[in-house]
Structures are given as C-alpha cells and as structure tokens.
Length: 257
Image (cartoon, rainbow, N blue to C red):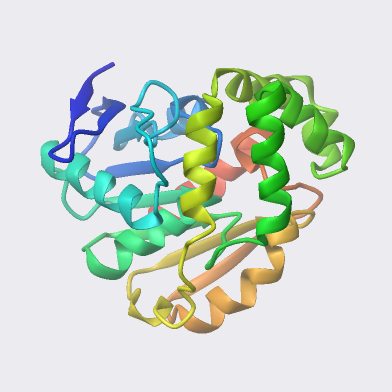
C-alpha cells in the first residue's frame, strides 16, 4: 500500500485500484480505516477506479499531536487527490466521513456525492468526552464494549458475527491518541446546514432506519436541491458491515444514472 507524505507533513496510507475511467473515493467513519470498506469497494472494482485511504490518526496514517479539524481532513483529501491527479471524483463518506465530504464538496468540484449515516454539524459532545476517557484509560476494545453495553449499536451489527468482528478489528487497531485527536476536532465542526445549498451535484443520502442520525435526513434533503434519500429498513449506522451488498447495490444504481 502506498503512503504519501503530504505537503503539511501528514503521512497518509491509501490504496488505488484501476478498473474504469471515473474515480470513486471512499471516506471512512471514526475509528475506521481502509478496512471499513472491505465489503463495499470490491463491488465497483471492475467498472471504476477506486481510492480508499486511512484518515490522519487512523490505520497506518500519521498520528500527529493536536486536534484534527474537519477542515484538516478535507485538506488531506484534497492533497491526496491532487497527488494522484484525480479530478471530479464520486465521493462517498460515512459518519465523520460525511462531514469531511461535505466540507470538500462545498469548495471543490466532484461528480456525485453519497452520504451514509450523515451528520451536518458536531455531535453532542457529552458521550464523546466519556468515549475519549475510556479509550485513553482502558483502550479501544473496552470503549467498543462500553458502547455495546449502552445499547448504542443495532442488533443487525451486534448479532452478525462477521459485522461485529469487523468493527472490533478496527477498534483494536485504532490508536487511542488518534481517536482523541479526531474527536477533539470533530467536536469543533461547524454547522454546515447553511452551506449545503452550495452542493449542486446529484447527492444520495443513505440511512439505516435504526440509525439515530436519521433525524438529520430532512436537513440534507431540504437544503441539497439535487438529492434523494434511501432508508435501509431494519439496519443501523454501520451499513458498510451490516448490509454491504445491499448498500453497494443502492450506490451502484445511483452512480450509474
């Protein structure tokens, strides 16, 4: 896997696959990595070029001291695309990856936008402060188990051994400091609701019906003119693990038209 050292000194780990003319770029969730998309991106490899990467603080990318603002992640993405001469990509973001994708899309040219489990502003900070405390004192696996005990995950994640093991692997591999720095920056995310109208490209917004973030759907649909919403009934926030084939099918249908 190539590792690029960006002009800002951040080391970003990424993979590319060549299978077509258009580029699809995947931006993963908090405490994720390239592996977050392992059941999704293979569905597109025969017809598209693919770029998957680890956000700063995640996977094999740099864990540099300091808070990681959404704008920092967005600039990392911009630099990575420029280094690979990728123009007008189809951009797919999940969770914190939707904030990054929104920030990038507002001021850069893309072809289409897919937002999965999306949020448009910083989440409630209280639980995240607790998460950081647990991550730093007890570790990331303890954090995942705490969140499970708090019933924060859907049954379609926790009762699916493949899905749960996949998320557990990501948490085990996540650097607690990288998690802290990412959360610190995410909690300073601005409210993008007043800027969503600047996104003029076709946009698909996908939620699991059991995802607590589904309350945001109307903010996106009302403010992004060329948008549509897909609800995946019975599923939660981690659609990439809970129902990856169906998620890939919805995305494929959207980007092929």
